[in-house]
Length: 537
Image (tube, rainbow, N blue to C red):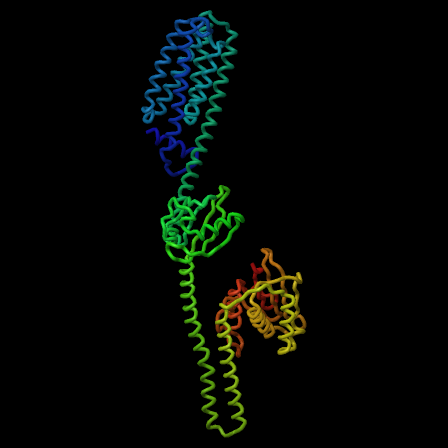
């Protein structure tokens, strides 16, 4: 089979191991079609020259009868070749070889009838060799060149032996033969390059088709809706989830027909062409959706992602309830210990007569009561995280005021804490009360582990590379071991005997409520915490 042979040749030249599809055979069959069409036109030109111009042309100048018969036969054979192209699928190499041999024989006889190599017809063999090399993928090209060169040389030898030619014409015949081989070699190299490029294009096409199928499957199974919209707000592509969220058939529709509110947001977004979000209510489905607008290349199209806000809020509520359940269990466990101590101390106090023991028991009751009060206060603080009201805070002024307020309770903080804010007008988008609470927890934690020397706790604020703001808080204490860094933000994890273990957990939750992030970095040399937040929109 021709297709199998072409496939094996393609694999060998391209270095592939997988069997290639039948598509390459069609490419070379189309090239063979044009090769046969060229042969038919050339033969028709020769016959037309004989019929209409006769001996007035240089064609057939020596033997016009031979030229006429050969031209007529060449046209007949070319017609047969052109009409039997379908047979080439089974015998491609043999079919092509017969055609090339016929071309060489016919052109050589026509050249002989027209005066030999100096008639100019010898150079038509170059076209035959070049076409055969490209159509046959470079196979047998040198054989065809050798056959054509021998035909030219034999014709010249016959002419000299018959005393109809000059022996000096062998030089021209030799140069023509060299040109034939050069053309054959060039065609062979070009054919190899064509085959290699075709194999590469097929492999890239298969990879691209696989990638497109994967992308279509992913988009089809996405939980979010996807719309591809052109500049006139017509929907070009969509996934099934988009129809489910909008409650309408999207195919062939436009944004004004789907949701007028969405169309209004889209047209306003077109004036900016940067990523943006907007919430709207789909009139058909009644769902509240969040639309995210993105440019889609240079063709003027846009991507619109649709997300079900109600579903996202329900999922967030489920997660919040699950977290609340875990937190409640931990709170019950944490409260049980101080309550047991208070209860036991109260029982002993009722039977105790010694004043010094009563004083000690009363102290135990007071300490554990304060611990329970701190625990309840921090849990209440955590419950207020959703009531954040971010505003642009001037960090230099806010941190200085915080140090003054904290210094009234802990005087050593003024000497121990060193503050650096660069530039001085640096601002952070944060709720004011939340920021005070976060900074209070971090500074208290740093003072607990720092040496207390001047500058033992450093607060440094500076802009980040992405335009956000970074607030670093570092102490000179022993730092946090790598094993404990993954636990410091867990609720009720503490290394301090009187700590509740909620300070850092609450600080991180408040940061997330304000669109910021609280992280623990490598020791520098002590514990190193960093708040990353952005400016208010």
